[in-house]
Length: 209
Image 1 (cartoon, helix red, strand yellow):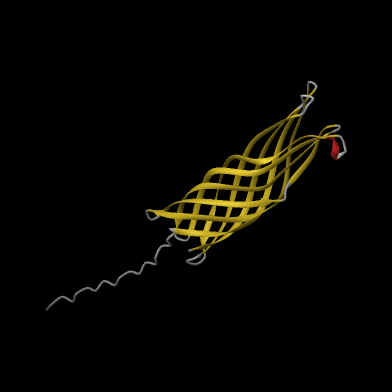
Image 2 (cartoon, rainbow, N blue to C red):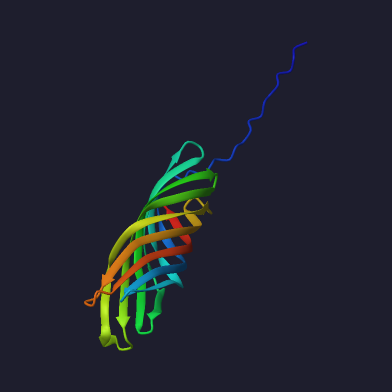
């Protein structure tokens, strides 16, 4: 009597999501801009650490590459705007004004993928349109020091990204950007040193091509 052959049924394994590819999208969130001000006048030192929260929004473009079954490396750039600003009295008649109206970054990304979920860290180069202004008195005509230019710095952060479909990606992320220090000195020799940075908590939606 012959043995009946054993038939092994193939086990179906659903395909793992492939993160490799170009994507582009938009983001929206909250931005807390910070300005640490040190003001020196006639041997007096005034210090203020001010924060202001507003809305941040913009667009992003990036590219990911799968490295092995779980690791993802990528590069991403973004451009955005924020409406946060601050005004703070340093001495009785000296006021600081600051904004970071436009910003952007170019960052590397490294993440761990669990199928459609990606956990990632990011870091890179940051730039922002920073305005710092120290005004003396109550009249705008008494303005004494002013700076409005693009400042460079660094950005660090991380987040979670999820592939809802083969092409639709959603994310939530945190980014910290530091744009360095601006030194302003008026004709009387008074010195103002302002450190500009920004925290963002934002959500994004992207299309993977």
